[in-house]
Image 1 (cartoon, rainbow, N blue to C red):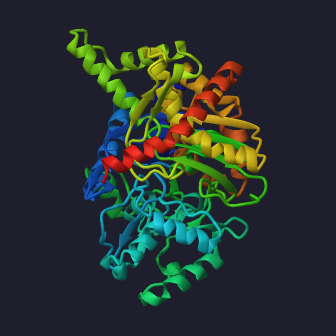
Image 2 (image 1 turned 90 degrees about the horizontal axis):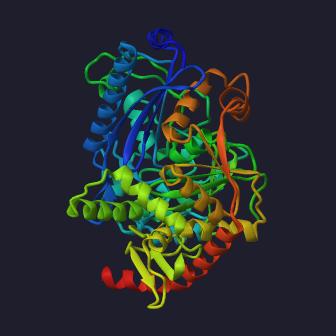
Image 3 (image 1 turned 30 degrees about the vertical axis):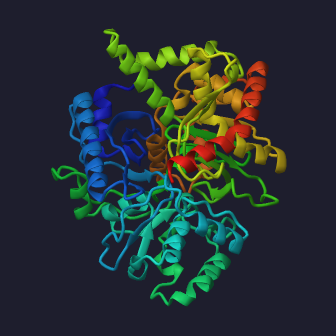
Length: 533
């Protein structure tokens, strides 16, 4: 790393970039230099809450999280460089995609924020998918809006704007109601040739909702679309005080278009060219495959979204990944405390992952279901984590925890099989980031589950906020080169990464596990129905 005095000078002169991402369990900010090398970070831990059957975050918690995270970043800068953080070259806001935030003419939130995690829009999703001949997942904003219409919710008549979480944060900081095309493509289908919302589908939506006589049309209430690198406004005086109530951070800093966590994941893994792909594996897990041609068919299990520059991407999104793994880790942590030998959580994870590596490749007949919440791909409305085994199955810690790791990726593989088999998709590379692949064991399980070599870059731990900082920095280069070339030539030209190849026995074992898993899905659904009657 360059001399700290030189870094301090760059920070003072605003020769830096900030990316802030609102993840499901953590809000994180990253400060980088002009080459996007991380210099400092800040974070805030939060949790969604289940309120009246809706997974949500309150506006108060959103603002508090933003402020505490940014304050943490400022503190880290002062500690490391003895320098206040008062400005920067550009800022980018990212957040978990999809969901539903509806506002009235006074910009008041009409109903609590409905996050991507909700599986309450099945009727709307099915009707819109059939009307558009295009998959509209349950978590998309337009599905939430149409379900509210079908439910005859009173607030719908008062709507003047809808947005995603990233778009909302961007709006309160800049006053601009805009969205990066990648995040916008999770609100409403996007035309990747003309780089706008799909005009035919906009017309179709107005046609099927005209009987309600709303004062708005769908075009009126969606945020405007911008592409990576375009100017998306600047930090207002009011926004500066929201971001930093101390008043130290100055207004006027330019912003890049706000993006979703899928777009930042693609950027952070250099996976924006056709036939490249990436997997983000944390609370949820999703795979993104950038397409070189349109798919032959549409599938309810496959979303079509875009890169931050508007290229079509096949997305397999699963609501559940590491949450049940975390739950079991906490149980084992409690056991260590009860035994009088309290272990740090990091050690608990290390032991469990190391044991999983010793397990049978097919988990010895132990099958886990990690569904904390519902799952659209497997048509499960509610979560009901479950472990099943025959009475003659091996039941060791190694097999049990390996089955938990397999379960975290099983639904993803079910979705990916559609692309592999029906669309003959072959990826040139698959980059992976997120908590699941922090260990070598997680990386090898991922390679076996996807039956594809996976690359984990040394920067993988920086994740989405770092990807957002890169998009902020790209505002300086948009007129000089494409985002693809910028990532190849300026960001990843000297990046190191670990490549893990699939193991033939591991691939066979995972396939055997998945075959049993799919057979037992009916049992999982029945249990869920009984528990949530």
